[in-house]
Image (cartoon, chains in turn purple, yellow):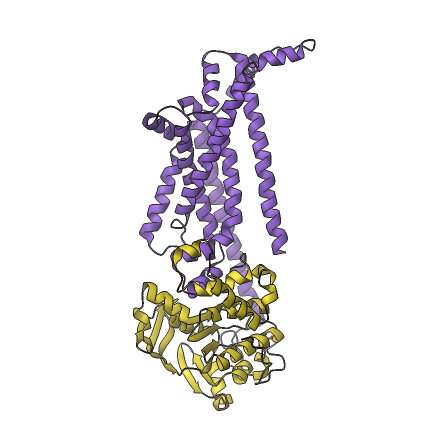
Length: 303
Length: 271
């Protein structure tokens, strides 16, 4: 026997060659199954892709033909700016700047309030929706389905309903954003919860904590940086989303954009669009900076 | 007096704890030894009710531990403090808050949600930390501490629970020899000075011999030995650790403690 480790009954009857051969066999078997599964899923993906293209009428020639038309529309909305009278031309282009800025602030605030409200709801719902934190499957199922409902119905549809219920204006928009945010953030929060270290949870439980205490002391401290990161990401998305809600009369700059489009006020369209793009970029950059700070700070602290 | 009567725990089709009857007198320091998977951890978790028994009865005085629910169950968990192999602290909270978690078994929910603890709890936590020589680290985050320090924070948390017994599940298995000795010394001192029963799972014989009044040996879910360290002969050790084909167990190979002395290094008491 040329093995280093003491044999323990099971292996002592085989020689080294036999064991190595059996290992080689098992290795080949495993590789074979793995490759087959990869091929299977690859084929499945390809079939789904082809099916989707067929159903959605996606075609490259159509894209090539249509793109210049889209560009024509955009180009048509741009004003004539001359070098001689640049200031005057700009002033004319942005004739409604003060009015638009007010609407823009309203849009940002709608996104902000909607995110905060939705975040609070998401926080309340994410714990019962985490597989590792609830034993009662009925509660888990109910929480998951509630979150699903909140996020699968589009914001615009919620906004339509709320405009009908609460009248025109930003209130309906804020509610629509809050409901949708609760659904999508709640799911993300729950996923964060499902990835936390179970040991602190057990420690808090063993000290005699009840369920809310375990969530507060065992789960939240671990999940908080991720919550914050997702919340900021959602804020970016919601400010963008808020600008579209005006289409159904739920407040924000979208209302004026819609009017401009309907009345063929071409230069107004480009003016508002440009403002929107600038604003969302600025918010994107700010949120991203804060998120990186949060994550970076955490890395530095745990090192 | 903690009493286990014919306690059995079944997971699926494996029997983790098989018909165990034991009683623990107040103030004892008991070491439970055995191979991995012998049912040592499960036994402690059954006592603390982190798991429920399949059959049998666990009682403490007049209390039927298995029947406890809600508030009474939380109070029971607070009374038998648990110490874990991986410390199970909340890493992102500071040491002080981690120690004050020891009070939540009897605290109201709302203040805990806001992380508000009474001033006297803070004072007690500071005292417990000082006793374990960790007061200077009290405001640091728990994950900035070394393993040995973290385990002593866990002991301070256990002390905050004002427990009748302390259950330690492999408290020194993840520690280096020096820290292992510090932690075992701390447990021993608490056992002697506060008259708290300590039941500890140990995977090393020398630690059990050095620190425990009584040793319980488990194999395949059953109790195969129950006696004093001096009664633990090599044939008994063979029964606990060996299997059919294996040769004699070398006790020295299982050692994790540096320069163990039964008296240990006594920690200072600040009262």
